[in-house]
Amino acid sequence: MMKKLLFVLVGMMVSLEMMSQSFKTDGDGSTWTLTRLSQTEGSGVSVSDDGLVFTMLGDVTIAAEDVFNLESYKEVRMGDGVRLEILGACSLDAGDFTTSFYPIDDQAQPYGLWVEGVDKVTVHNVSFEGAGLSCHVQGGMDITDCLFMNHNAKSASYALNMAPDKSSYNVENCGFYDCQRSAIGSGANVRVNLTIKNCTFIGNGVSNSNYPQLNLTVGDNVVISNNKIIGERSHTKVGGIVVSNMMGYTGDYNTVISDNVIEDNRFGVAVYTNQTASVLNNVIRNNNTEVNPMNGGSGINVYDPYKQQKTRISGNYIEGNLWGITVVGAAEVNIGKTDDPSATDYNPGQNTFLNNGFDGTIYDLYNNSDNTVYAQGNYWKTAATQDAEGIEAVIFHKVDDGSLGEVIFTPWITEDKTLVESFTNDEFTTPEEIYSLDGTRLNEMRKGINIVHRNGKTVKVIR
Image (cartoon, rainbow, N blue to C red; front, side, top):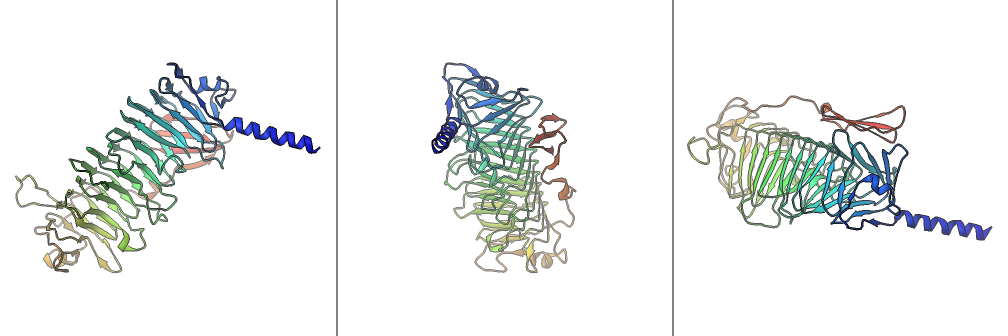
C-alpha cells in the first residue's frame, strides 16, 4: 500500500512538472495561432471540443523569427504565473468578437501577455481579466476596444505596461476596471509618446498603494483626452493622473490633458518637473479621498522645484477638491493672462473654482512658490462677494505669506464659462455581473457593448 501511494505521489509530481514546463516555437518562420499550439505536442495548450476554449498550463514563447496571429471569438484560461511571450511579428486583432485571457480558476494569477519586437502591433477587441499586457515593441501599439479588468500586478505595476523608451502608443475606446495598481504606466526611464482617448478608468488601485490610475512618464507628445477617470473612495492613496519627468530629462516634452472627467480620486491631475503642460477643459471634482491634506488632494498640482516646467491651465471646472490648484515651483504657470489678446502667452483663463478646501477654509488656488502666477479671467464662484476682497479670501499667496509669490487675479469673470458634463457616478461603475443560465462564455462586441461570460458570470461593459 505504501509503495502504491508513493508511486501515485511521484506520478502526480511528474504530471505537475510536465504541466508547468515551458514551450518555445522553432523559429523557422512559421505562423502560429492558439489552434496550432493546441495541436502541437508539448505546447501545454489544450482546447475544448468546440474549439473555443483554450487552456494554458505552462509558458509559451513564440520565437522572434515566427509570427503569431490571435484568432477571434476565443477564450484562453491561463494557469498561475503563466505567460504567453511573443518575441516577433504578431497581430492581436480579434476582429468583431472579443477574445479573452483570464485565470483558469479563482486561485490562479497568470502573468498574461509579454509582447516585444520591432514592428507596430495592433491590439483590438481583446479582454484581459486578471492578466496583464506588457509591451516592449519598438514600433509601439494601437490598442482599441479592449477591456482590462482585475489586473493582479503580476506582469507589472500597470495592467498596460509600455516600453521601450521613445516608442509610440495609441489607446482608444478601452475600459480599465479594478486593477490592483495603475491601469496604464511606464517606467520612470521610459519616455513613451502616448495618446489615450475615449477610455474609462474606474476603481483602479485596489491595493490602495501610491499608484495613480494613470502613472505616466513624459514623452515628446502625451495626450490624454475625453476620458473618464473615476476613483473608488475607499482607495485613499490612489490619485487620478500623473505625468512626470522624475529622471530629469531635458528637451521638449509636451503634455495635453483635456476634456476629461476626473472624480473621486486622492488627487486629480499632477504634472511633475520638466515639460510643457496644458490642462484644458476638464471637469475635476471631489478628488478629496486623501485623509491628510498635507499629503495630497489637489485638483491640479504643478510641481517643479527646478523651475523648468511651463504650464497652461484653462477652461477647467474645479470643485470639491481639498485644494483647487497648487503650485510648487515651475518656470511659468499661466492660469489666465488676459491683458494682451495678441500676446503669445495670452490665456483667457475661464476656469471655475468652487468649494475647494477643508476644515472650513477655502483654498481654490494655493501658490506655494515664489513665482508670480497669473490667474486672470477666472470665475471664483466660492467667493462670498465677487470683488477683490471676496476673491482674495479664496486664494493663498504673497498676501498671506510674504515668502510666497503673488497671484494676479484681476480682472476676473462673474459667470461659469465651462461646459460641465452632467452625470451621476451610477453611470460609471464597475461593470455589472449577472449569472448566465448555461454557465458558458460567449464573447460579443456590438455597438460599443462588450459582453463576456466567465465562470458562469456575465460581465457587461458599456463603452
